[in-house]
Length: 119
Image 1 (cartoon, rainbow, N blue to C red):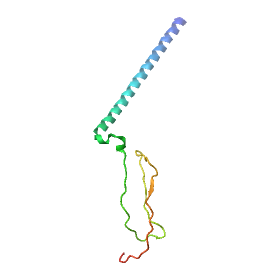
Image 2: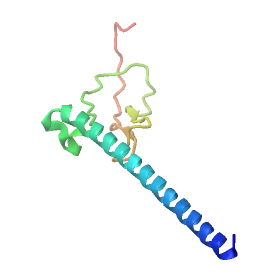
Image 3: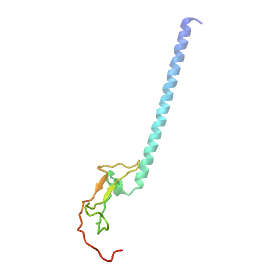
């Protein structure tokens, strides 16, 4: 076998390998695209089960409201005011949209008075 024949044979082999590699990459890309489409389809199927009113992104945001009042307290140091503090903690699938995460009610200062009959 002459040198030219070997070079031609090597060139054909190289072209075949490149072609096979391209075909493999195309198949992998097609498989990944099908997986992505299937996943997207499953997502939309889940969303289709949700009532129409909740399909807006803003409708899926959770809100927390605290309503009430403190009626009284006993045996507190009257030099300090009274207030409530709260902190919002989230898990890995939740996100705080409007920080801060710590909140405090207004501070109130009570008048000192004796309450009889309290044990």
